[in-house]
Length: 460
Image 1 (tube, rainbow, N blue to C red):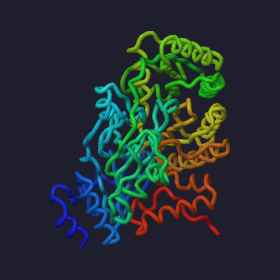
Image 2: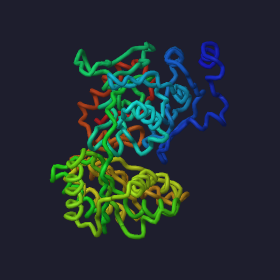
Image 3: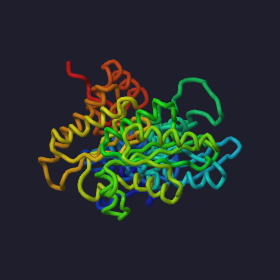
Image 4: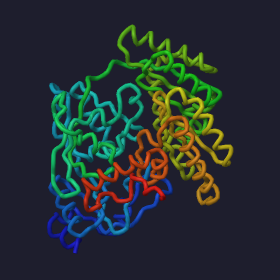
């Protein structure tokens, strides 16, 4: 029996089989994504304990679902009935920070902000910064290939993963990737694991690339009367050849929710706020900030200015990070994560507003606007099944509109459960078959996070 084997081979405190406690591990933050009931939750401390768990699941043909902090928004970490949930929350060691090689070696349970703080003590910086960085883990960031506010200039998680230690779907403990600055030997199997959402292996250690700490940023803020006008300003920034270190959009629904929660007074003067930053050094940064300001005004800002108060600038970006939890307090949220070409941002924002009107629901907008990654937040009253149905219809419309504009169904949250149908629309049948072939090769027993990411087979 699986539980007997796990109790025999793992320390007793690694297992959670109390249903009330285990219930806290069964789903992520994806509203309405289905989840099942696990037979047990395992909280390993070492890679070998993960390997023991995987091998037991192989022997008993039991599904295994890996979970980080549970901050995901696509249902990728949701339990399936009868599975083992492996929580990496105890694998929190920062094993190494090498200032000479500019790399760090960490456990998958290390919180993103904790890694960034440890690196800063050495004059180094880990760039990927999802809005959930105070809570989300590096392992979860690797699973979804997370991005964040500064990825418009510095890239996403995959750009910083040098190497991984992984337990495979055959129960082997292997090392993928490298520690060197360059390396092109063999297939990029470490890169393949990033974004695979626990369907190809269980990550037990991550080696990430670091950068030197940045110069202080210059902040530009603009108020707009519509999201479409703000989108035009985003397009103008791209047309001007500016690569900001952040370019974020927050609409009136988000501003009002943050004000109701934190009383920051942001929703008094603006329907939409666009926040830009540049970290170019010295006079180049001054000039780039001015050019960004010009673009905001060109896009139709009702007010725009460069911030000279760092505390005020930081408060504006803090409000951006608070937008999702502030809205979540008001009722269930269905969160989108589409990404479109930057030139299509105004059109896509207009289509999102049209979907809200067509389906009679509230859609708030936050966005990593600088790289076209939009996060419409579909809000419904608690217990309103009719509104919930309309929200799902709008969700599907937004996906179709993003694809029609040359975009993708997810920029950083992952596919999980919620985006599988959309991925089926995005990918050709031949490409879906390639995904299935990779899955079959690396997880031949089909135990690793089954039913996630890869779309169902196309209908004949």
